[in-house]
Image (cartoon, rainbow, N blue to C red; front, side, top):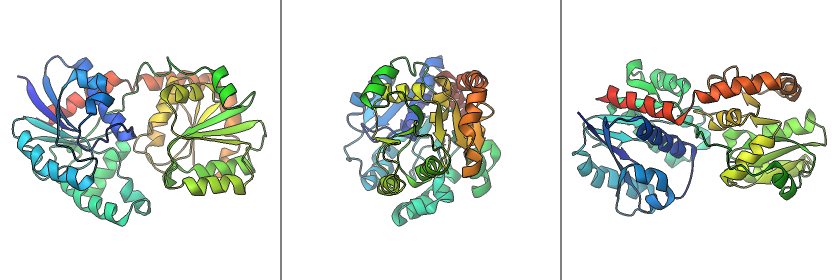
Length: 369
């Protein structure tokens, strides 16, 4: 029997890319690649979704919701009314944005990418924190199955909300197998960014507080003092952008820090490939996709031991507490173990394929039914 599945993507901001959005879209891509007509999937999307996500729009039927312009209040209202009516026709509804409307469907899968608001409430506005504190526990309680990208998030939900372990399933991130095949050449990036013969360490992350850019600046000033070493930071301007740039100037690191905004995929992949290491000192990650992307492109990883990162990196990278003295010799460690780390990283990255992500999602759907 074919299971009719509706997927709520009204929360997905058209034209923008974030970790949770990429996570779910890759799951659905993997499901399409591995499904043998077990699931008949319909996506409920914002207007213009197909223009920005043409590949997945060709895989599944897409139903556009009335326009709400990304306004959260209007989106929630549509979920409670328009989508609630649509949901009656489906055997299973999948809500991928971390919360569920009151009338979510008879059987439901709820995807929660992370619960950062529990660990770092100071990173959220009072209004947002109040909303999440009320809606997330209710959504978790009512969901048939909850899916998470890591065991860390899974255990956090089980412990915090006292729910049955059987109710929470890990659905792996899926990393695109074509990653890096269109990467900008090292020669072009060095010329354009004036990196010349510099050694590069790379951090691709929005400048939000939990990404912990400041730790790397302190490290560059106090321990990684080789003037030939350059830190390249690429990502959107987050809540700590002003503080980050002020710290660069205060520490007199203007000539050793290259600050890029969000870059195209080709440049990001090229920077990963030319870097001596991906450096990822994040205080909180529900998964941490860049560490697996780096492994797939044969770049060693140096990461913090916070949240999900030790689980995701495993023994395929260098994982350390956020202590400047401990990180001081990390680049030397990477140089000594480079071949071993690259080989282990390739094996680890293969475990996080889009196909495996799709298989995990299918298992979550079956469990919900």
